[in-house]
Amino acid sequence: MNVFVTDGNSRAALAITRSLGRKGHHVIVGCKRSTSLSSCSRYCADSVSYPDPACDSEAFIQHLKILVEEYSIDLLVPVTDVCVLPVSKHREQFSSRLRIPLPPDESLRIAADKNRLIEIATTLGVSVPKSFIVDNPENIIRSLYKLDYPLVIKPSRSRVPDKNGWISTSVDYAETPGELEEKLCKMPTPVFPIILQERIVGPGIGLFYCYHEGKKIASFAHQRLREKPPSGGVSVLRESVDIDPVADGYSQILLENLNWHGVAMVEFKRDLRDGQPKLMEINGRFWGSLQLAVDSGVDFPAILAMPTSDQPDTKNTNNTYEVGIRSRWLWGDIDLLLMYLFKSSRQLNLPPGAPSRWKSLRKILNPFGHNLHYEVLRFSDLKPWLHETMQWFRN
Image (cartoon, rainbow, N blue to C red; front, side):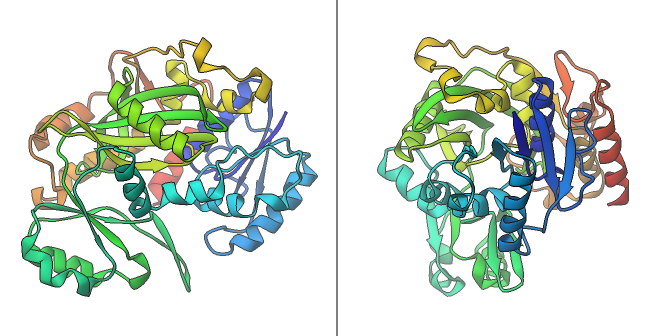
């Protein structure tokens, strides 16, 4: 099968390339530049460049259509939001024989909009943090002192368009009304609406799924052990765990309601106050730590690439995987190390009960561990790690 994988510089694209290349598929990797993390893999058959979808999504789609025809692509796998959203919007422009494993466009956009997702989750009885929606800064000024602190400041979308392209957003925190007002007033208008949420203290739970037309065909779970920044962000060390039945029930309610198709990551935090998982977000795409699922025995890319008739039916499949497998993103962990070394305690914004700075440093400096796999660094496929290393030093 000829497979086109976008976003070649993402770790998820590398995991997809390695998985499908090992299975004998002909994997073509696309990126803004022809040389990327995934294109360096021995499992990449060819690599191409395309216009930056963040700058010109229309040009990206037109060029992608040409590449799909030129390489006789059977399966198109958009990896990050910047490619997933335009491909979803313009999917009708591609040949009907091309498989694009994405949910309905409206479902994808609901999942990408945290505001709409919270509304639907609440309607369906899914547990969510207490939330307050801010349409613009003026609407919150009179209520600043009525809110409970600390607060999490969450833009509704991780990327928002503006006249100059795209604005990347991130989660922030406010300890006081004055700090909240200052941060909200600095935010550009296109970023609104903003969600203000109570800060949930507890471990993150990641549940991962592959669906076919509203029916689950594979699932997996991991727990984050370290994140950068340590206040909450991208996981740099994570471990496969048993699927939490409550979080799994919530996830399936949401994904079935959205008639999901393809892969999804549903994130929760277990609230230490009551032990209950609280919904954080749904990512309707492959996730950065995908390699852990593959290492643990759930090969999502291979499942997604199967012909529909061969895909597993979870009613007749145990969907078992190995629990206790750990995956470490080395350069991400080194970024975290530098944060602990050079940032103040206030800048780190550690949650209550977090390990001390020095205890965290000792753990990061230990290169070994039981059932530990390095995510990018693989001696059987070393070039991607060498490429990543050079990029890290350049940046």
